[in-house]
Length: 134
Ligand code: CO
Image (cartoon, rainbow, N blue to C red; front, side, top):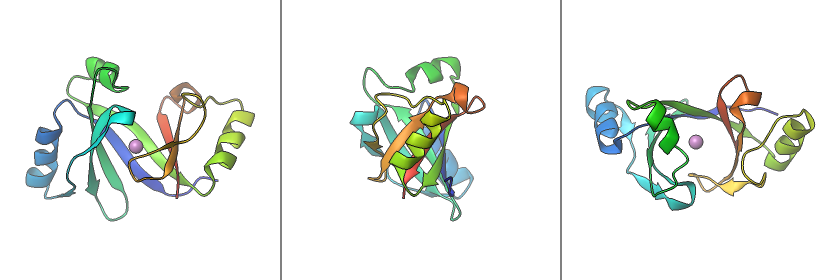
């Protein structure tokens, strides 16, 4: 069921500063910022060729990454995103195994315009997992 690593997401307190670090200090290919109000974040993608890094900055009052940044004020690794062929089949498989899907369990449209789901970190070795249908 599990395919390639699509991206690793890093929550940051200052997206412009983090983008500059990757672009200028590391010489990385950094995208323009993209606001995703329905997800409560602004994102930047760093294209690494074999995968991507997603930098996340809180957007709006109820950002899902706000509490993470309170605990990790310098920023930190927030989630990993794996590709799947069929997101509903993937959801049914993990829920049948007893794992929890965050939210109402229905896929939402992610940063790439594809359906995504998030899985509870307590059910996946302490790591928030995003599944993206590709
Ligand atoms: Co993501």
